Length: 106
Picture 1 (tube, rainbow, N blue to C red):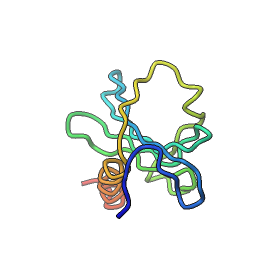
Picture 2 (cartoon, rainbow, N blue to C red; picture 1 turned 90 degrees about the horizontal axis):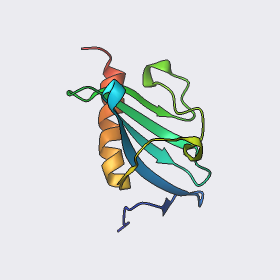
Picture 3 (cartoon, rainbow, N blue to C red; picture 1 turned 60 degrees about the vertical axis):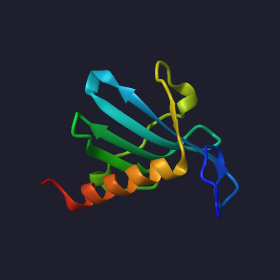
Picture 4 (spheres, rainbow, N blue to C red; picture 1 turned 120 degrees about the vertical axis):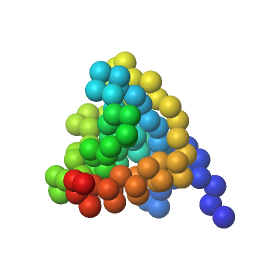
């Protein structure tokens, strides 16, 4: 059985980590999956008290309905507080956000 924790190597050997960060000005939670190089591989954005998904993007996505990932590595960011997540915690939010975005506006 695989242990799901921060810093788990991916299939290609790269170590990944997961965290979330809150941006109060936009009342938005950001969830990130980040590689060794600091670049975001997957990103989720949940807005407001209802945690409405506005993005659930991969670095390779070309479908705008899923949004986009950050344009700079996390090592360049200032002023954010990282709340560590496990892969499992990230995946639960990821699957829900992707499904809701795929379904479109309600």
